[in-house]
Image (tube, rainbow, N blue to C red; front, side):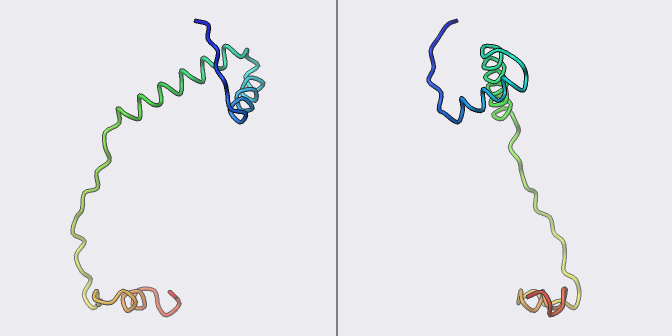
Length: 81
């Protein structure tokens, strides 16, 4: 298929750098880049959503969990600030 597209300057520069790196033609490079981009997009939508599962860690005896600054001082010493 033959078509005309207008590339932004930064995209054209990156495309030409990729052409030189691969030692490939414009047609080969643009087709491969588009193919990989479209495939990556499909893989992103197919990924399962990430879920965080909470679990109880319990409390360590002797630590005061009511004050964050006191807790940090007990765990890390005065130098935590």
